[in-house]
Every structure is written in structure tokens, then in C-alpha cells.
Length: 520
RNA sequence: GGUGGGUUCGUAUAACGGCUAGUACUCAAGAUUUUCAUUCUUGCAAUAGGAGUUCGAUUCUCCUACCCACUACCA
Image 1 (cartoon, rainbow, N blue to C red):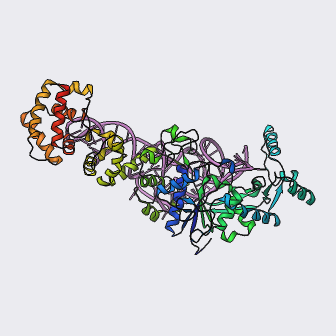
Image 2 (cartoon, rainbow, N blue to C red; image 1 turned 120 degrees about the horizontal axis):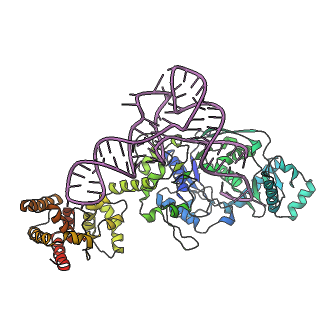
Image 3 (tube, chains in turn blue, red; image 1 turned 90 degrees about the horizontal axis):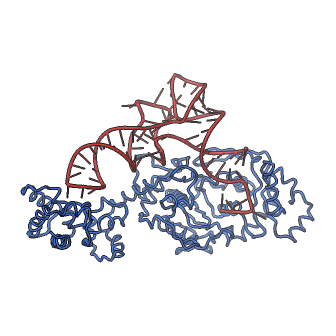
């Protein structure tokens, strides 16, 4: 364990597509841990598989973290991955493909010391071996047993090896997994784990064909060079933890080996399997923070696109697999930093719950001021062809806030606060626009028109109710015919709220309009 | 198949080995209300199964079942 070392954690995604919420959660936990320990949150791009590289993915990752408010301290500058070392970014470049020169020597060092070897088996040969084993109901594994019968620097003569290294390009460097050794590991979340090397295979560390390391080598070398103190990553890496321990040992870096924490996976809402990038559109909720345009031109659903506030999204994600130990559920990013602890991270996989996500957004929406929300609503109004002042919009929001989960709901909940109805729901009109009701309504219109000034919601409600009751009219009928004239339907906001928002003049105008359109 | 990880209401989770297993979301009922929604109240609902240790097990141990991950010259 490393004492007194400055905390440095990293998020190291592979740019193979858009980051999904599982990845965002991993980044978030890294961020929370770093901030809590006054440490540094590094972003590193692990692009050692050129075949799977997807253009735009890197920008997406940076943009997504930015939107979430969990911006890296190191590795990113001005929205771009840092390509050269500098005072603020002393470990650059932060893209592994640009660090390729670094890894070869480390792989060679392992060979020198007897911890790795050259393997000359072609990819096709290995595929054939696997197929053959499978046909016998077995599994072929390149390990301490089978390597003795394969073409590598352990079985071939020195001169043959020399010759093959010079004349062929298909070879790899493999880790020489020791025989029958117990690897004892400690995970910050899972506790002590032991594995026998007998069950492990000889992983490829370096590929001559690509002149690139594989994940395992690059990851360990970079974590070491970048002085990472804690590795917080997904549970899918737990099976390779023994290899990584062995690597640290073989390099002689055990004293600076980071501590590991393996996060459980995010599971599909229904039950089976981990959440995957495809699930979003299938299951009807976003799995991506930001929209992503695929090669087919299709744009995916996203949290930002669906109208989630980043704070709500982050809060929701933080609570998927962690809790502060008390009953608080709404925590700002700063409060999360304060409360976070790896010890309280849940070991089991968490089923993602779309309903709870909405609940979080609703809570954050309600906590925001009407003016703040008005600023966000104005552009949406504009899309509907409505120009309104911020003041008017804020007033409208004050009466519809409780009916909304997202800012866009303000419109669907009550467009009539901004646009007079041009049509009336047939069924409601048939029911409430009767000769009897019209009689009441025309008198009520005069009553309202006689107000000398605008009134508050309560005053309007009281006045109208008193007027109707004192005349002993059927309250519901009158109110709904009034609502119909104001909104175009018989359901929606309270009458007083509507009048308060749109004002007396507009109220009277709409009643008159209804009479004109629907007749008396 | 092998290796590793996991298992508390439908979901997310709480509970130094010790009260009637708590909370939130969802759902249901009731109240409030001019409609719808909100709000409030109440309710439904869980320790996977079996052994063991113990005065006492959701908690510790073992077995079984089920779920998940990994098992690539992908990360």
C-alpha cells in the first residue's frame, strides 16, 4: 500500500464507440474518489486496437464527461486529448497509440528476465487448434502446458528464433505464466481473492504485426508511468487482475502497484445480462449521455437529448451501486464527493431503473427557480413558434412546474399558456358547451371582465367560486365550460392558475373566441 | 466446460451477530381538488434453498441452485 502518495486515478476508455452509462459511472466514481482525496483525475485513451477504432468516439467521451461536470484534470486540454507532455500534463501523450514507442522495451525487458517469450504461431494455427479442441469437447488454452508443444522461443533453438524474428512479422510476445503459484490479491470492494496461476493462460502482450502492445501490457506500463494510485474499473477486468499482479511483480514494480477496485456491472432493467449499447432504443430509455450518430446516420437517444439535467443524471448514476449510508438521495456533485467511499460500493450488479431516473430529474426540476427554468424553456418555446418574455415564461412555469419531469413537459402540459386554443376537443365541447352552460359562462365573463386589476391565484379562485356559488350554478359544469374556452379541452390546469398566467384581457378574449367558434 | 465474482420486497438499497427486517422508486386504495396532475395518508411486497457455528444468523462457514463476467494477436 502506498502511503503519502498523491492520489491519482484514471479513466481509460477505448474509443470504440460512444460511452454508455456504465462507463460514465466508472468515470464518475473515479472522479469522486480523486476529488475526495484532493487527487488528480486522468483521462487516458486506450486505442491499442486500431481495428476497432471509431472516429468521433474520443470527442464523444470528452464531451460526455464535460456535460456531466466530471472533467479530467489531466490528459485533456481545451476539449482535446493532450498529445505532448507539459507542466500540467507531465505524462503525455495520453493516447496509447502515440505512446507505442514506450512499450516494446518493457516487453523485451520481460523476455530478458525470463517472464515472457516470443511466440510464432500464426493466428490461423491457433484458430485451428481451438476448433480442433472444440470438436473434442475441450478448450484450447495457450498456457504452461500447451506452450511446450507450440512454436515459440521456449521450444525453438536460439538461431531459429533469431531467424524468425528477422524474417517474419506475425509473431507476438507472450507472458510466461508461472506454474502452480498462488496469486493473492486484494480488492478495495471485494476483499481478498486468490487464484492459482495454473488456471491462467499466456496472454499476448505485444503484437509485432501492429507494432502495438495489447491492453494488458499498455495498461500496466501506463498506470506505472503515470503514477496511478488506485485503479477503479469495471468488474469485467476482475479475471485479468491476477495477470496484472503478475506483471507488476515481473517488472519489479510491486511497491508502486496501485490498489484495485472492481465495480459491479450495470444490468438490463428486465434482468438478464449487462447493459449494452444496443439496449437503449430497444428498451425505451437512453443508455448514452449524449446523442451519437452512427455510421448509418441514425442518432441514438440520450440523456441530454431526453431533457435530463446533468446533475440529476449524475446523482442517479452515483446511487446505482453506492449509497452514502444515510437516507439522503439527492446529492449535488460536491456532496457526492464529500460522501463517497469505495467501502460502500455494492458488490452485486445493479439493474438500471428508468423510472427512478425520471424521479431524479423531477426532483432537480422542482429545485430549480422559475427564472432558471424559463431560460431553458425559452428555446423550446421558440421551436414551437412562440416568442415570450422571460418574466411571463417564469410565471407560466410557476403554475405548471408540478406537472413536469422535463423542461419540455412544460409545453405538452399546457401549450395554452402561450397559445390560445384554435380547436376544441369534440367530446368535451359536446359535454360542456351546452346552452345552459353558455348562459352561465356569458355572465361569468362579465364578472371577470369587471375586475379592475390583475389578481393573484387565490383571489381569482375565491372570486369565481363565490360568484358561481352565490348564483347557485352547478360548479363543475361552469368551470369546465370556462376551461374549455380557455384551453380547448376539459382537463388541465386549475382555472385560477390559467387566468393568473394569461391575464384578464386574454381570458375575456378567449371566452369571446369560444362563443364565436362554438356558437351559443 | 473451466476460473472468478455475486444473490434482502418488482427495482435501487439499509440493518456492530441482537427490537416488529427500515427507506426510496413503482404499483394499489383513500383524502384533498372545478377536471387532470400535484400534495397528503395508508397499504401490498424481501433475507434463493439446505446444513453448520452460536443463547441468538440477513450478517460467519460449508453445500446446492440460480445470475453475471472472463475464458481473443478486443478492450
